[in-house]
Image 1 (cartoon, helix red, strand yellow):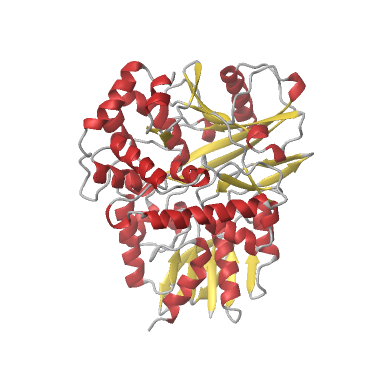
Image 2 (tube, rainbow, N blue to C red):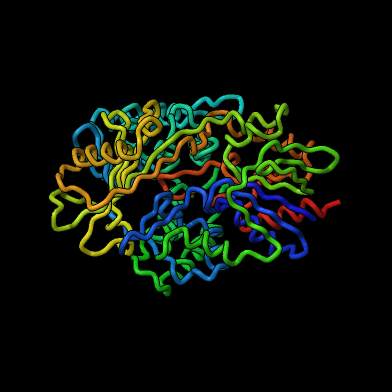
Length: 520
């Protein structure tokens, strides 16, 4: 069996790794257009700094990633982030994010009442959600994130808390992004309890009654709330989840990592690219990896996939595609069945990482970082204080800021040069955080049209693609970003790797492929 995998990011590499081990007699070829593997994951060693130019971590509750790291023998390098207060910068003022909230939705009265971020009028409006009815969804049961939360919590809560928290994950217009595709649990909770405030309070209380640990509550706050209806999580399931989280945390505490194990994010002491390097080094011998390989003109006829790679015609019995939506514009030409992928919008962003001498830094550093409201006059969206979030990446006498650039409707990321973006990021973060110190160095990474936008209607469009592939393209598997939303600010949610025909986790890609091929 000849298998071709297109795309050498984490998704494609992992598919090749597991499939190669599962089927050692198969011939597997992976092509990557770039001169390196890893996609958006880029780790650099700068003197004594570990610098992540792409995502800097993954969510600890994404056990598929931890399983992969363990399989690669890297478990003893796992570390967890230091926890600290997060802030919101809104038009000249910095405010702490209110405690007792789940993804910005208040579940405790006193922290919300005391919050300086929201005015009394805004608090009263948010509290009126207690008397709201469920939002009238469209024919597909969908609604944009912005319209949903504005309906429930009001415009001020949207502008100052919900939008900075959620919009940054996908780098797009929150009034276009699908709630059903990104945070379906909010719809499920609302439909079950009648409104958001009641639903989130009830969800939190059910977790407490189930005896969920502090670690598990952290996962809950990231969106693992009980599902309404068919997917409702029972107390027994919560107990199972709690045991799993505690077991994982116990393993981490026994590791050689240097960071505290209290946070919900995971990193490796050598950076995320050490995972990529390990996969490449340990790739089974029946897998051939090729960089600088541009795949074009994919077509299917007579039970064979044909394509062009660097001007050479090739064929394959099975095809696995793990690339972003934009690549589909050059494939399966004339077949409108792929339009649900082809037509996905994509946004751009940039990350500026800057290092300072701690002795010369004249600003006040609070917590782990801050979010910036969209109505603030700046192209910046967030800033992470890396030496406080990931102390193992930074010498003790240094400060490192990780600044995010790029808002919907602002094209500076695409128009500006690296030098201009670096200067802009420094000038703006100096103004926002009120310091004058100049950095020892700045690293910039521009990610142009790299973040798929999961707009309203996305789930229905992808379902149509799934059916089309199932009916007309045997042994074709579309995995990765087109199917399931991923994000950058949460860094990194993109370890939920799905097959379009049937959703499966990253560690089970090979098993799914084998099942599909062997069933008669």
